[in-house]
Amino acid sequence: MLPDVNSAIHLQELDNRIRDLQQEVSALPKHIAAIERTLESHVRKLDADHAAIAANQRERKTREGEIQVQEQKISKLKDQMMSAKTNEQYRAFQHEIEYCQKEIRKAEDRILDLMAESEPLDQNVKVAEGALKEEKQRVDAEKKVTRERTAVDEKELAHLRSQREAIVGAMSAEVYSAYQRIRAKRHGLAIAEASDGRCGACNIAIRPQFFQELRAGDVVMYCESCGRILFYNPPVLVEPELADLPNRTTS
Image 1 (tube, one colour):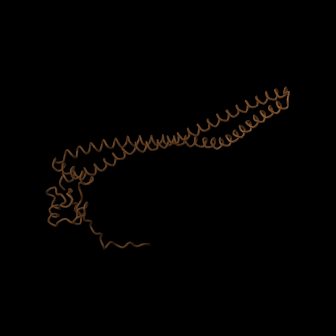
Image 2 (image 1 turned 45 degrees about the vertical axis):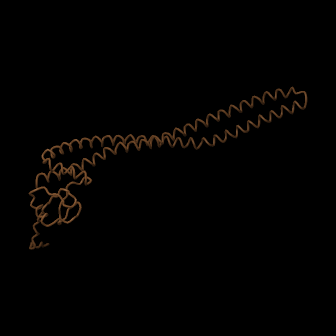
């Protein structure tokens, strides 16, 4: 096999590995960003639940304050009612007391509603806090693994690029230029094996004369259909097993 063809084969293997590693290195930050966005959405949901609990507690305090105000009013009205001089004045105080009592009942009912609303909120927050803590630990662990994986990939990429430079340096400029051009045009596949009289990439039959020249390996040859660099690996002959092996006897 011609040195340039052999180099092109190894170069394609390196370029494919470099491409895969580059895609992985590029995808890892996107993966981290995605899990961080999910984590942030859960944090925002928990913050909203905390805010709802705080609002619930504030309103309960407000209603309790309203009850206290109304109770103070009732106490004053009862004192004033004792000094009423007419039935009309007495009934007026009674109406005001009844109104205050009605407002107290409304506030108490609202407090009961708020207490009922707060129970599931409190429970949800406790569960969410525990889940969020575990999720943060998982995200941190995954980020650590991703950083370590990226470092390994970057190191391997540097090594592969160094190997690539050495291979390119040993190739003829003409063949390397053709390799680059074909690779860009053929989605990364610039060189293919010819087997069974066909191009291994496009599967188009090769002319017998062309195939004979390819087998001779005197010049770099390109598929007449797809334009890829072609190489030929002669089949490895395996010696047939001896038919007359001595029979094994068992005692």
